[in-house]
Length: 364
Image (cartoon, rainbow, N blue to C red):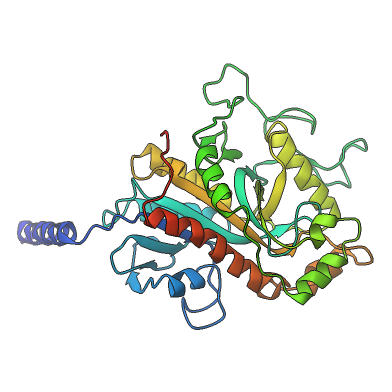
């Protein structure tokens, strides 16, 4: 009886495997990665994926085991979209599940990761789009509460393997994983995944294609930007730029944290990067793409990261950090709607070029 049951189970597994093997394998040329959707994928208040799904006619719905949201695809499978957030951990888990589903061949896919973000008034205005050159993990570090830290410290943050803020966050120069010389034509990751450099060659191509774009701005966006006196970039018409993204699970806000974030981006990259945006997802996503690349399931050198500014990361003069943080809610940020619009307008110019076969010749 036991042998019969085992035989039946094995026969069932073989049959299931055979059926899965006969399923269509999608080889998308573009994978659009977003981090949240507000409600339904279409027809209601949009999140980060909805414009892509509606405007690019991603009408096919595919369930993937291990993913927390369905995959959306167009008719011929050349473009798919996934929602993988929030946070740092969930994007990594979702992307690994996608990458190891045999119904998808992602080895030659381009990745357009896009999402809304905070921006410092030092660096840009609401609705501005930033192509990310470096992703800096703002979580993997030591922290001493400022009420207990040494008085001479600027803030309580320092590298995970160091003892003071001024010590450089690098291992010994002899380590094989220590990145001191960053590449000009390939993505790289430093020794603990605290810094990821996006492929400069692909980034330069995308920026060159979009750098002259002017992006939409509403009167409330202009009015809020005008409150940041002494910050001319906060009052500019939104356009396209390049900057680093600092990714933290904690949704922080305020002038003191903004100062820390600028310091940490410069510190973690040995002064190579300038902060562009703040968010909470991209370290997890990029580490997953790195792992999928090492496993032969994807190519992270084909990944682009676009962030668009929905809110300022600190308060204006005359307002406390608490008043500023709680004056706007996540889906009601002053720049929310236009940041979603900017992400699609800028990102789709690049994805359409790729889908048309006009992508750059990459070295890797």
